[in-house]
Length: 83
Image 1 (cartoon, rainbow, N blue to C red):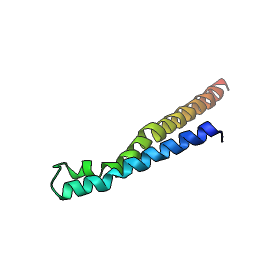
Image 2 (cartoon, one colour; image 1 turned 45 degrees about the vertical axis):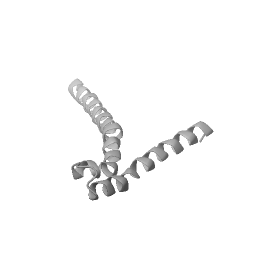
Image 3 (tube, rainbow, N blue to C red; image 1 turned 30 degrees about the vertical axis):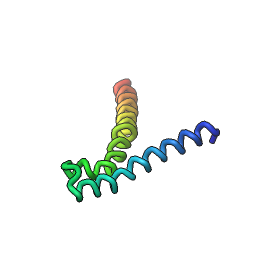
Image 4 (cartoon, rainbow, N blue to C red; image 1 turned 90 degrees about the vertical axis):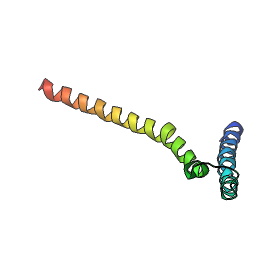
């Protein structure tokens, strides 16, 4: 791993940790009535990073795998139809 990659990994993990540290702050503000947010938004620092991961990582992987399977099926079907 190069120094630049290590720095990028460090900054990414720092952002996630600092984002998740907002949850206790939101929780305290909600409990003392300072903010009148839905509990969904108060707990968003816990589940929002997973949603981002799902959207930007897992869905493209699923789409690529689906396209690869379709390509293989079309190749097999073309070979079967040649016979």
